[in-house]
Image 1 (cartoon, helix red, strand yellow):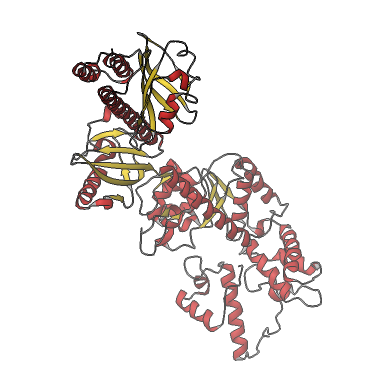
Image 2: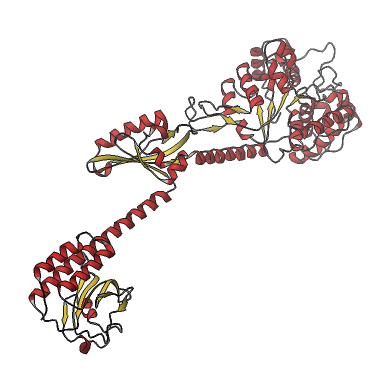
Length: 638
């Protein structure tokens, strides 16, 4: 007769499992179940649905535990319970299911009572069963107690599964947060740090456990913290999905004891138990901004070089054999291999830029850009921006950021032509670049460092400019580490004929004309003339001679200036003879030729000590009016 004490059974369900969890709970459950129902054994299993197998969580049979028990449900009463999701009660288990597991077969098992354990979605998650070696009548008391144990089992199984899912979810969330490349910082209502991910630790070079409880200003600095506090107040006024925002313009983080950096950032708000928390996500964009600056700089370099290629720099080689030229070329060979600052001195038109290129092309910097700046051609108000660049909005009209010429020349060479024209207020900033290799773009507090070799050039007497207070003495000595004086064309003897021959070949080809070689009278005229405008003037004369040539013969005598000291006599069709009365047209033509001659000698400079107006003894404004009246324009390319 089966002995079932209902009160003791209920007490066993409560007391036997109340203090246990996990594996020990399952063991206590099946052991108390077998005792309460007075059966030979009991077990609880988890269902492996894809394999259609049961794996024991606790298996009690014949007063002993069976460890690591697992079996397929096919051909067993468990299959019926699981597939049909119902309680199954059998008194003749062996006759009905001869395929019972080998370890139970032959053990005298007669009866079986099993029920599937269902999850919250009503899918089968496990199985609870008792077996006995006696018949097990379907008494209401027995079935009720068995169902109570089953309810307790499924509640614990669901709880453990939920805990496992929550634990897995937390682990995944933790891995997600820690694997993020952006720094994530959680803050409480006082803006104290409650959590930091791995990226935030690296971003601020600090350990999360040491920062927990510290105020966020330890990470961001006072300025960014004030901005953040204002944004949290804005989020507090919002509701629902609106409690998140991009931080306009990002933040400049100034961590305590660390290096400041610009950061893109977002801020969001959430609540836990009615208490607000904030999530700050930051990304250091210093490298990206630097990359953008580099791209911008390279683009500017490419544009500058494209313009340089399109421009006509004259001839590819320095032509000449004179001792004076060879001495200058020897100096180029000596200084090119160094990084010394070079000051090229010489009259206008002697080829200062060509020599600067020669120094650069023979240096270790030859694969980097040579950036040219004509200090006389840039308005004084724009020279600083041209040299050092500017930030967007630095001044009226600065609609975008621009790299300066020193930034473009980083790693290469900068050629400062007409350095004597540089305003005094900018000379000190140039001296700083030369001495320290750093500057600030206009409108920026950020210091830029550059590695630039400086080659300067001038046709002015800088020593006299220093004495007159027009040029800084310290800058002069810093520039003239290696002075390189270029000879005037009149000092180069027969070089003028070599240059003229080379120019004729190239310019005739460019102009699509065919001209013969220089006649003896041409070479004599070329050597006799003083060439105050040097090689530049020679080029202009040759080009005009080719344009006016006819029958393949140069018209050199028509274009070679004859009114300047040292110039050869050149007949003119309209030349006056002594005592002859000139017409108004003749006088205007004579005046025009004389004005052009003065402008050529002054390198087309109108005013100033070296200007054409002083040579003519008139004011600069009068000369400008005369040029307009006589239709005098500076030739293109001159």
